[in-house]
Image 1 (tube, rainbow over the protein chains, first blue to last red):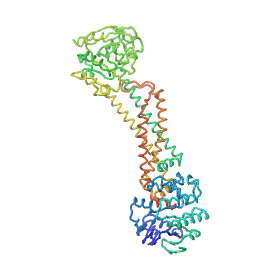
Image 2 (tube, each protein chain N blue to C red):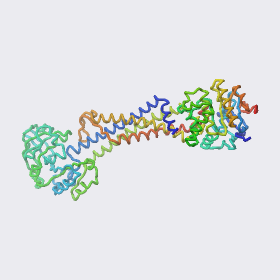
Image 3 (cartoon, rainbow over the protein chains, first blue to last red):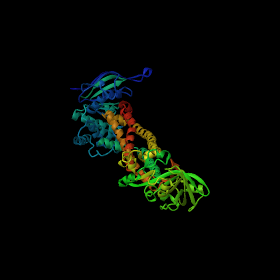
Image 4 (cartoon, rainbow over the protein chains, first blue to last red):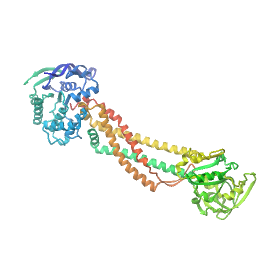
Amino acid sequence: MKTVIETKNLVRKFGEAQTQVTALSNVSTHIEEGEFTAIIGPSGSGKTTLLQLIGGLDEPDSGDVFLSGTNIANMSGRQLSDFRRDHIGFIFQSYNLIPVLSAQENIEYIMLLQGIDEKDRKTRVQEMLALVGLEGLGDRRPAQLSGGQQQRVAVARAMASKPDIILADEPTANLDSTTGIALLDMMRDLNAQMNMTFVFSTHDQKIMDRADRLIHLEDGIVHLDEIRNS
Amino acid sequence: MLSLKLAWRNLFRNTRRTLLTCMLITSSLVVIILVDGIMLGMIDVMVGGITKTLEGEAQVNQKGFRENFEPELFLNDPDAITAALAADERVSGHAPRVIIGGMIASPYNTTGGLIYGVDATSELGVSRLQEATIEGEYLTGAKREILLGKLMGELLEVSLGDRIIITAAQVDTAEITQELFRVTGFFEFGPEEMDQTLAFINLSAAQPLLGMDGHVHQIAVQFVDPEDAKNKALPTLTRLNQGNVEALGWLDLQPSIGGMIEMSSYASAIVGAVLFILTSLGVINSMFMSIYERIYEFGVAKAIGTTPRQIIALVLFEAFFLALMACAFGVLLGYLASSYFESNGIPMGRMEMSGVLLDGNMHTEVRAYQFVAFPIYVTLLTVAAAIYPAVFASRIVPSQALQRAL
């Protein structure tokens, strides 16, 4: 299998001198194409920091991040911006969608950034909406959608750019458990159907039960890397 | 298109703030339009006061005459000049004048003054002497007619029909000469100095009195298009500038007024600059508030690949749309306000500026450029004011902005 993500000795510290906190300490791991991986651990264990470094949203103090073979740790801001746009899909916990754009416009936005022509954008928006089960709701703005529907739009937006990997940090944190599980099941189905690589963080046991692989983080160190039902 | 849609819709996320900022920009535009209209109105009154009252839009004199009104500095061949002016279709009127200082005495008092010998008919086309005659009759051409300034009349304690003796030196012999006149009217131009020191008699009476038959000191000119008077290269004037003769427009004749006009355009620019600084601060503040409210959103936008340049463009488009809305209201309100004051005037009271009387209402001037150029300036400046917030937004670090979200 092709390695999508590889981290080597990632170190990330916050603060200075006496107040300095090591968020990640020599984290080395790799994620293969088509994996459905959960990064788990208690609050402050470094889950978000690891996802941010993998996603090129933050820079490590030392170490390397290879995404589809490209070391993103040394990229300039502009290169990173383009790389994120074309290779990484993001799903955030909240504030995910642009409130003044409709669901379909939110999905279309990332393709607009990619320079895809209007006809293809419109076609793919409809495909994505169908994929996440939101046909007919494309005209609604985020405020007119439930939390679960908003996260589905976020998943559709993340997939619309045809990324190598989708990163999601606690995507179900603001959802009730039933909606959260339904969202995860949908992501799981997309992973199975389209061989899309998902990496998400969670501390919800029911959610992590659905992952193929669990990377346990504790105090910034990979405590356990557990392959489950692959 | 989606970016423009996004920018437009973002404006209405906080309608109250957008409207307040819009009102700030609108008010600035309205004030700039009004200030410019008032300045133009004031300039118009001042220029009109100079050129329409007595001086004319241009004058032909012998070089040096205007400095001290030396009587011997007269035009040698006024008929040729008059013929040239009469043949020029740009010229709407021209009037020959003899101007000399002398003593003006009544049975009760004596004063010094400047005596104008004018052709009653020609003068109608260049000055408002007839219109300013507030008592008695305008000149008819009869030999002993004299028009006095209202204040001079009071000083001399004369009324209509009273005798006036003018004493002056003859130009050709320098001998003192006297002539009797009868007060036929009183005029009031407005400026105190004019009403106190000027007297008008007929040219036909002035020339023999001063021993300058066939000669005049000055020919005042009015143009069909008043703008022609500002043109220093106008053939009408340049053709006459030969030898000792100089033909000058009012800007050269009254450089102090030209200076004042220049100063008033600076005043408009200063008012505009102060307003712009205040408006800019409002726009910057509003844009920053808007950005801080959406900091997570910018974090998400940057995370998914929006470039700093695209963020800058988004914020600038928002400022552009804000300015467009504000200018639409500003143009409408500015037009209504300026048109109202153009018709009804702004009460200014009575004051004299640079020898020009500003009396009563100041009427603003409505010009097309005020509703085209000013809104363009305001739009550009609003967008310029948004550059700083836009650059700030473009530098938002996604990982920091998303601290609570991701």
